Amino acid sequence: MLDDTQITQIANELVEAQRTRTPVPLLTTRYEGMEVADSYAVQRLWAKRNIDNGRRLVGHKIGLTSKAMQDATGITEPDYGVIFDDMVFESGCEVPWQRYTHPRIEVELAFVLGSAISGPSATIFDVLAATEWVMPALEILDSHIEMEGRTIVDTISDNAAMGAMVVGGRPVRPDAIDLRWVSAMVYRNQTIEETGVSGGVLGHPATGVAWLANKLAAHDDHLEAGEIILAGSFTRPLWVEAGDTIVADYKDLGTVTCQFS
Image 1: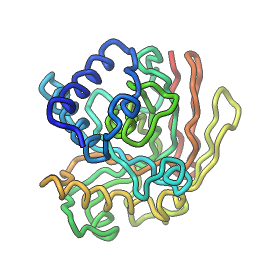
Image 2: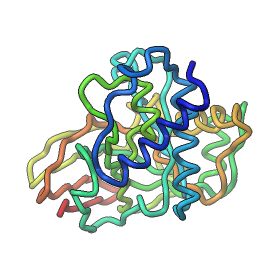
Image 3: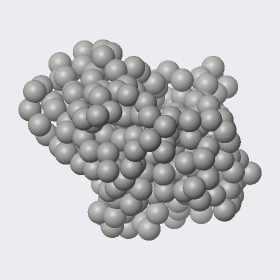
Image 4: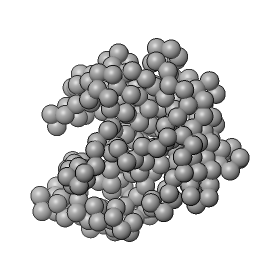
C-alpha cells in the first residue's frame, strides 16, 4: 500500500503528463507494493484536480470487460474511469490526433441514464430501468504512462486509459432491442479491421453498469441521472494514426465516424 504523499505525487505527475503529452515512467517499476486500491485513490485525486481546474464530470467508462483481457492482466473484474465534458465528441467530428498519446479505438455501447443507480445491490434490471437511451459509441484510449510493461495498477491510475469518446448512430430505448446482439464492423480507411458483438461484454453490456454502481457504493458514490456510461468494448483496441478515418457500422443502429486530424 502507498501512503498519501506517494498518491499525491503520482496524481500530480499524471496531471502534468496530461498537460505536456509526455508519458511518465511505469508506476509498477517505481512503487513495488502498489495495489489496485492505491490506483483508484490516485485516479480519484487526479479527477479532483481536473474538476478543480474547471472540467465537468459527465459520466464513467468501464474497461477490461472481456475474459481474455482480464486473464491477460491478472484480474477477475473490470476497471473504471471518469468521463469529462471535453472528452465527448459527436459522430462526423475531426479528432485532434496530437491531443492523445498512443491513441487506440474501441467499439462500445453508451448508456444514458434517466435516473440514478445506487449500489451495493444494483442489478442488470435496475440498469435497464434507469436507462433512457442506449447508443453506439467509440472510445479513444489514451496513455499518460509508458505503454510497454503496463499492469492493471498503471491503467487504473491513468483513468482506465480513457481519452475521449465519439457518440452517434441511432439511440434506442433499452427495451427496444436485444442488447446482447448488437454487432458492429469497424473500418479504418475503408478497410474492415475489427468486428464484434455486444454480448462479448460480460454476457450483456448492462452487466458492467450494474457492477460499476456497486463498486462506487464502496466510496459512498453512485451513478447520477444524466450520466453517460461507456459499457465496455466488444472489439480489440485498434491503433490509429493522424489522417486515419474510422467508421463503425452498427447496422440498424447506424454509424459512428471520426477522422484523426
